[in-house]
Length: 304
Image (cartoon, rainbow, N blue to C red; front, side, top):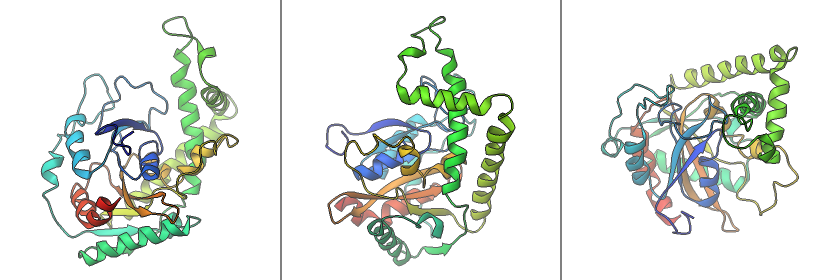
């Protein structure tokens, strides 16, 4: 709807890609804030340690304007951060040279046209005076296993309240996908399997978080493709139970770590399909990255 000029902006909730991934496929800006930076009050919990409400917009300026309104402490959501919210529209006026990290593992197996578009965007960063540096990150493919176990386990717990007794309908009204996730999550949390699956997944999650922390000791942000392929035809997901996880593979690590990330359109494929590039920042910043992605990619952004 946003790409078709039917609205000015949209609000979504990203658990592991649901803001940035569709934004990449539609050629628009999608921002996933730091976990806990925007209240989840009113959102039906799915993966409650992952869910991050955010905005989908046409420009970085619009994203900043909306985050000024959305961000901050909410007494009705205990997971929101008590940190003071700075004006993101004011932060767009900041300007400084940044060190941008790239990891080869985030480019492996990605459509060559997407790789080329991101590399061209990185050249623009370099021309603007920013430094591009190679970093080694945990292979994103391992995040699929971690996310699948943790998210399904949290789904099983969060949707257990829908029993038709206290409120709403019972679980027979849920869709097939919701039921599959409940069953897998219940299995992962069951006696005899908790340590083997859920507990181990949490340990790997900690490794991923520390991996990003180490990377941010030498770089300000991390840049890479948002999705491994451009938008597929309607119905492509019908026969693939793991379609979402495979399409979100490059986004799941940063969601698991609770980081902030933004998708920027960086061109089109030969077939005219939009290509997205993600910029991943540490929790709550750096806000100067917003100006970097806006200024450096302005020619591509306006073309898109």
